[in-house]
Length: 326
Ligand code: 5GP
Ligand code: MN
Image 1 (tube, rainbow, N blue to C red):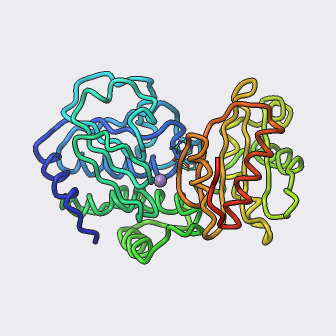
Image 2 (cartoon, rainbow, N blue to C red):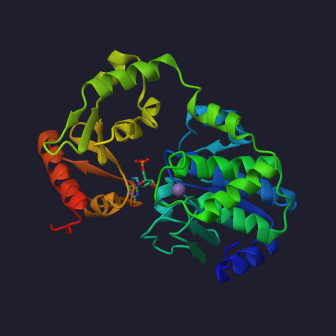
């Protein structure tokens, strides 16, 4: 188990307080949902009050997991709390939930570039998922490792490692996963619930987006694009694209993927993925975003053709291991 001085401080802060509000980033993923709910179950086991508040709904496949249906979806915190526990957010504004700043904040994150906005800041970029950190905290709190808590920790790890694909994986990842299975997690059921419970619109949308996929001149970068019109025509929604970005990487030659999703007009949400040592996080950072070496994102505005050219150029540099220039 990792020993960090912050864990002790967080344990003391939790013991001394009773009512907690938990939050994580907008458009929550498996790690944000799993980390928040594992923590919420642990707090409840200690006799504390724990409300989870997110600005966006959990992705539909995750609604089948324990406690997810009870997450409050709201743009602001209502009610009084003794502390806020914010997971997975480089800054509190990433929650999209107003009113959290006024509480005593415990900031738990594994993304490089955390702004240390909390009264306690626990940051560990070596964790493959925020769920790995929550595991250590649950153990340090002395709470029984129930199957609900273990399921959420495992969900966090499974999804944030891209089903055990990313370079952030360490022996600790498997040690924690082993303990999750020993606590009663059924890995086959979790994988089926996460990956095999889609609707037909999603499959058709995947087909449409992948048919329109482009490959750069080097043959190593896949460029995928989606706008509202394409989604409507395919009968799917933007939420249905979760996971799509990983598919081009299944082609041996493809080293990186960049996915442009139109928000409105010339504003685009950009998601990127890469293999091995290619630091896509550094690329996202140049555009005011962030993330990890193999998974990152940002929001940009401009003409799509020129945006695509710019990103391809930066990603080619990242593939060659050349330093970024501006
Ligand atoms: P996704 O492509 O799934 O939206 O994001 C991949 C990873 O990059 C996630 O770990 C996410 O937290 C991070 N990320 C995505 N967009 C942004 C952004 O705009 N700013 C920052 N700081 N991180 C981002
Ligand atoms: Mn994460």
